[in-house]
Image 1 (cartoon, rainbow over the protein chains, first blue to last red):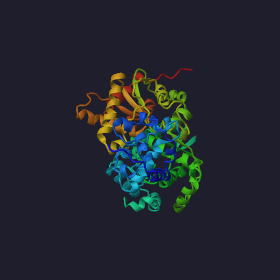
Image 2 (image 1 turned 120 degrees about the vertical axis):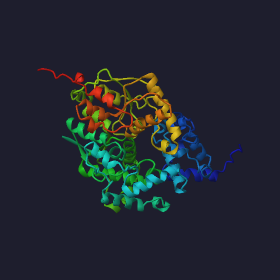
Image 3 (image 1 turned 60 degrees about the horizontal axis):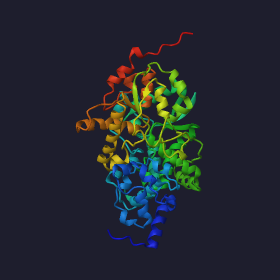
Image 4 (image 1 turned 90 degrees about the vertical axis):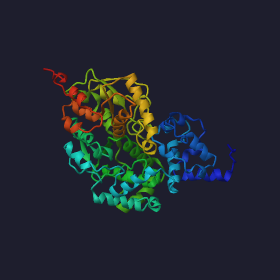
Length: 171
Length: 306
């Protein structure tokens, strides 16, 4: 494996990118590995999560890691945040990295459906069986949510249309 | 009667409305009026707006919390993921300098303003901390004495404790769901992988086999160490995963057993005497036998004669 070339400008840019996207605790990381020790994603076999993802960013390897899908296997469970002795909030770093990837459309293919559904119905998850399921258990077939509430859907569409997400063409 | 805004999320009202119905039955009977938050949306789930843009996430989460603020009620949700997303969003809105102003500028386009007056609770917190296990025990009509339960608290109700309104004393050894199950008369059995993840969510969407390997290890721990009559959870995602995946595992020859899975309020509703056809009617792993066992006349609690 080739040695990593230390490039201070590249490191500075990588860290600042993650800080700007919401991972401001990354500067506190001392690579103790407490986060990875409790991470279900690491346990399941996603290699570049928590400590190693943070190491790569701190090495300035932002672009080199962009196709890595480990970040999309993060369960957002926040065990890492609970145990981190340095206040890094590793999940926020993972999500900041996801936002960097998403901005380049480098994401798991499974991520597209929920965005479209959120935009169209106000819900990431829907099912055609909703009305039948609800009537079966004695509930109104139409839930009191945004599912068939045009005004609520319009509010969500307005928020999404005015967000950076609109520029990605995912809905 | 004290009111809470019932935030349903997506999974419960669409895929498991018998869980919703169980909540609508048990809360009024326990002195809490669930109020519908009309037009509530996805929290938004971790894989949607939070993965793309921080302020869009906060705007959508804030809008959902505002629905509670407008009615003057705190928000309670039965979905762990929604609880985690909404709690984190509220914590950022209330504590991150300048964030509330930034997000309120976005919310102005839909004529809404976040103020921060409504707290975010999980249904389990309202049951455990507000109603209390003694009050729950006093409403039990069918005792679960002699039945063994393995609990599954789920991830997002436990961590990180610094953003939660109500929390466990030690989130790696949670006791609230244990006490809620014991209030029904049941025995709660230990197993070593209690705090392990069920594998639902982003992991399952990204790599189903990795998700299933994690869950299989958890199931093995539950079956071999505890051999319970049922698994009980207060997470709708854990419920869907643990109930549905057993069918797949059996078809693949990975397991040769069935463990019925309940969301806690479903079990509570059965113990309180509500109709199983309304409160526990939809599952992939059969619950018929254990429901018949619970709703048995022999289990009726005798009222004390004054």
